[in-house]
Image (cartoon, rainbow, N blue to C red; front, side):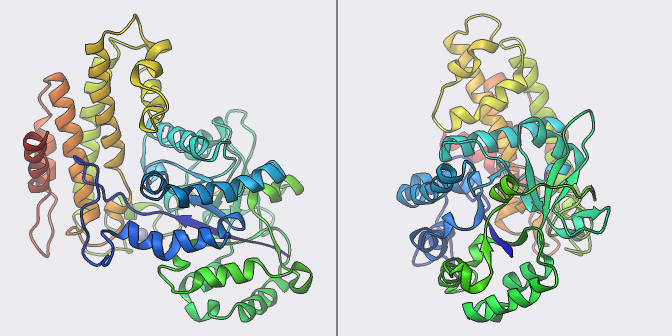
Length: 460
Ligand SMILES: [Zn+2]
């Protein structure tokens, strides 16, 4: 019986937009911040146990970037464990993730492409080989997203079972037909019952042997295909204590004694053919039963969150203004400003500088001043991508760090763009942030926006 545990490892970006450091966080004691605490409770023990070599996983690029700098030896262990599979089987067990945890069905095609390109390039930079699968933030999917993935050479995604409707009653994995002559795309629906059990019924994973017998009973009724248990990777040791040990125990059981064959999607695809067809339910996700409404407006998942619609509209208006100014300035220097933006990941990762990524796109040799202008505009485009981080809309209360951070990233992007070009921001932006407020505390979006502008003026 083919079984796979997928862990999605991710933390919202809590870096200050200006300093790019995570401020000291209450509740994380004795550590300075939550990333450090979760590293010690989850990433580190799971890496030391070798668990990253035996599950399917993705590490959010923004989290991995932090880990890479803060504890490179742990990041290295994760990469090495994945690499071993890649060298042995020609396909690794790591999946890429689009870069900033943007809900892709809510993003424009141009932003989808940037997010996916950055995610693939970042994976290649850290793991040393191209990914075959991509974890979509909140499993948010629509056909356009799958087209963008397919065009870049990706082969599969993992989705919740309610995001696909099988045509012939098969349990999956499935092929989803894509338009314009593209090959069908593979979707692995995860097992709802097993995933819910592991994620939300802690007693089911208290004892490894009992877990195995539960799983065997469950799979006896439906042994075919690849049975994926999808989970928040931080469950193993952080959200639930000792589950790093649980994971290590079950992953190392002898196959002949349990009938359980641990594998992962890329490897399973090497050994099996997918023929069953399904239709994608779009847009859809794994943690909102109203499509992807949760990340743009009030829905039944977060009733009373009236601030969500104005926040989304303020962020979108900010993006429109930033893109207008960026394009109008960059098009005088390079023939494809959006391709230049897609290449910026190489600058973020320190592989190349702006001069190098713009060389074959520039209309004529760029002067130092022109390169500096592009540098600031692209820094603003990075903050602009960050301001769409889905965590800003996940919870019901506005008075939390995640939505406030998105506003700060927006303000910083506007500040950088104005500073570099002298173009005054669209006054509608501040007005729209003024319509975002907390019913509980009265905190207003325009206050956060203005405070960030003032800090940028004082601190840089
Ligand atoms: Zn919802």
